[in-house]
Image (cartoon, rainbow, N blue to C red; front, side):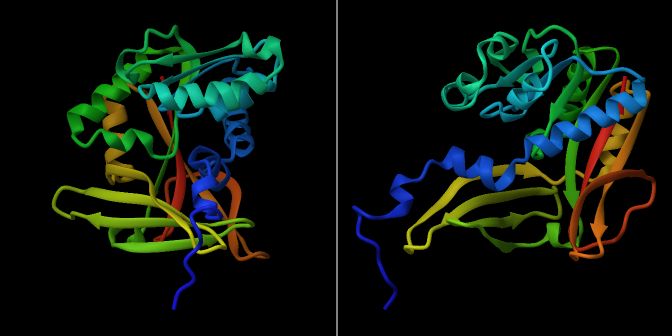
Length: 272
């Protein structure tokens, strides 16, 4: 018989989903490294202001202001509870001077009221909540309007033939197993439902800790909509492969020719 953990000892009952998500999914150091390098290469100057849309716990905002005394960041999200968690666990751990340069805004990303910035971030495929072309085009127009004259929009995207099917992908970590569950995909509309589960060594689990109802947008669709929204150029930065480790590398290079992989990851950078 399967081992059933006691309620008192169940690791899932003591787990914090936001901490698990940050550990399993996010890597703010690598994300901000990419933003810094890309902006400087494109604009020949350092980016100073950043807006993180769909920011959740604002981990990237915190990393941004931590790296420079002149940097400011705005985190925008509609979920006040998640913003409050991020303020307690992430923002409040910053030095006081850095905290003063970070503002969390509970608002719709389409009407945040934030002043213009050098960089707008939309990561973890969050913008896929816009399922129709007019909706996504509207978001891109809003993001463009929120940029300074030479600002950029940075997004991530994934795809490949594994992205078009139902599957569970398990990734063991030190104290838990991260499970990415593509529960449903409709090839007629492109809409999909995905879950994140966490499974613990004692046998307990957090099923559907996070659930997403998205449209799986392709790179050509994204670039066409960015152009329609007024961006003068968009570039795909393709994740490279490490031949030594036989794993994806942390390097992303600009390209017009991607590999027909089972699963790929890329950034899309749009220039105002």
